[in-house]
Length: 394
Image (cartoon, rainbow, N blue to C red):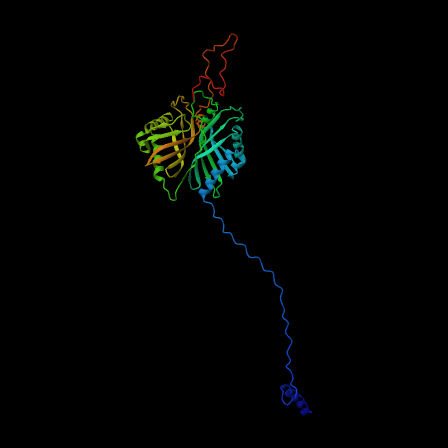
């Protein structure tokens, strides 16, 4: 049985090898292995290029943008736009007869600004020079307009006003304004409009908004104004002592003092020193405190307040023996260590209110008017808005 099985296995094997057989067996070719084709997978979209973050604006660029936007808002008489440049709790402040008057928050600031735009529908404003250092700025401007709308409950005069002013501005890190303090002479404005209660007062002629570009004065990194500030403070101390010898080193011989609450400039160091001594004589207990200074390039701006008791006659005004405080900013242009010009900003109405001078005076009487029979007395003079022909020319 075993032999038969072996023979059965061996013989076919030999035959397959061709040995001894007449017919060779063909090799068996296995069928091809089917290939499996995978369906293409959807490719992910290429990633979008990552844009580099925009560089943050510098403080100087943000400050310049603020003044451009603020000027545009004023010229468009858009109070809402102007106050949008403030922080939520931003403060707008300006001196009045009783001292600082503040509007806290955008709503209060918008209400006050809207009053100006109602009174002067053609209001125009231009920043003439802006001094920038750190998070603060001192900006001088000229504003003008025609009083064709109601102002503080009074009927419009139809007259033009144009005056200079200054804004001291504090910014936050995002370029929004935290506080702005305005210095401008309201006496000049109401005088130009024919509403000044003092017939003897004089004021500057109407200013026109200039076409010239804003002058930018930017402090350089590490710029040191300590020597100039020390010289300024020494001058202040000398004025309190009426020490003209000590005043002299600060002033150039041809220096010009432009006090925008006064009718005209004071020219020359001797005239300026005489004026300063006169103030100290009228207020013998005068104190003058410098609150802060900001310097850049040839300019030094200093904010301060002076106080005293009005005990000596000054400019035709009799002493009232009343004490008060007045706020101001001086912008000094220096050259070779000397002050060549001083722009002085304050509010004459604050001075008048503080020292008891804000009283309406009777209008001049017509000498030829003796009253008709039956009259109760001389006819009353014209209202302040109707300037008499013989009133002093401004």
